[in-house]
Image (cartoon, rainbow, N blue to C red; front, side, top):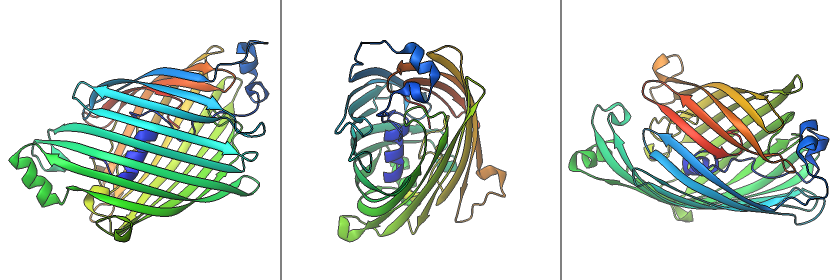
Length: 367
């Protein structure tokens, strides 16, 4: 099952394949990547339209296919390209997810706005539900809205505010499942939240960085007077670093965490690594580290190798216990779809602990 923050992450990074950095640079990519100059076609204006098939497969949702259609535009010449995109997918387990996404930049990139509307229905079949030893069939239903505004305050620093609204609930498909969900306190909820966000971003390119760092931290305060059913808080922070190695090699890594305070079980943190399904393993807090080496073989095609680890902790769980550590490894590749904007399609095969695994074809890199 998916918590509000996990739905946002899923919508931005996995099945909905719209990564958090999915926006285009306003400058020519040749300035930061010499390979891009070789693929550019002089005198030909790049198309602002994007249409890409998407694919994902994991044990929880099954195999899904879909599409992403997007339109790139500039609000002013000095700003990064903005984008509006529609994404939809359907799986062989009858899971349906659709999302409308928008990200805009104006005033010379000093102002940024991101908005997301999502709707989904996902049937689930668990062989061992949250370690209970029981087979459980459920259906997750959700509607989600998210809005974030950032304003440049100094150099590469931004500060802003965000808001989220979730109408999320779980239907138990049999009596035993209903008893387990009731015992665990998992029933979903309706909730609204507001919070603050701060970002540092000095990456050389927003779609496929070759150098630089990204740090952001934010919180969401879920309150009953905002339409919610419970009062609780979530906090999130992440750091990403991109290091150019040799002419065609890149080392990228990220460290991220999510922490909760007085959250219901259905709003706990989960695993964000490739090879795992968000919501299958839960704890109040999570911290992850993941690294990826990207090697460009030709002007447009490259290969990737990655590995990562997540710790789920809080309540009676700690990172001293190896049972709370989850690892992931995998290989994949990338194809440079739009050289003028350095937009790529990536594809990954990931293996987690036990039977956890995943296959992904997404718009953009995983991070």
